[in-house]
Length: 200
Image (tube, rainbow, N blue to C red; front, side):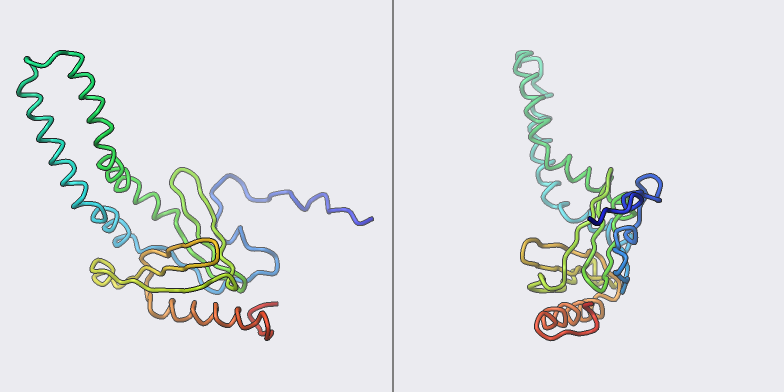
């Protein structure tokens, strides 16, 4: 009976500061690696929900100011209730502020890689998550270039697979990378029936 090598599950890496390369299997090779452009990533975090957050904040601020001006005429229990209410009612604003504060850390952690077998996406803020998308499961690869992306010469690549949707944000040279990724996905799908060099 064949047994598993005792050293097979021994981890030589120390701590949780692993790179995306640490997720590669022994027969897997790296084709491309990248990460979001810092300037565009942070700017998008600031502007993404800015109009909605500002309207929400202005609306709530008007009510809070009216309450403060009439605070002497309002019972204490009502003031406590309203304070708790607005604390929760402003959750969209708190989430927007959190998105801005965490943008720098998220950009440092986030990275993407294409291997000969799959796409790897590393994301996180406090911890890290690595998502795998195998080429033969990909249904579509689309590119979106908004105003901020155009200014920063980057783009967002949307990948739709059989069971998930992932986005590679603020990628440099997005048209070239999208085209290459589409070619790899198509080649690997064809290779289910016709072997090629990308799948071994």
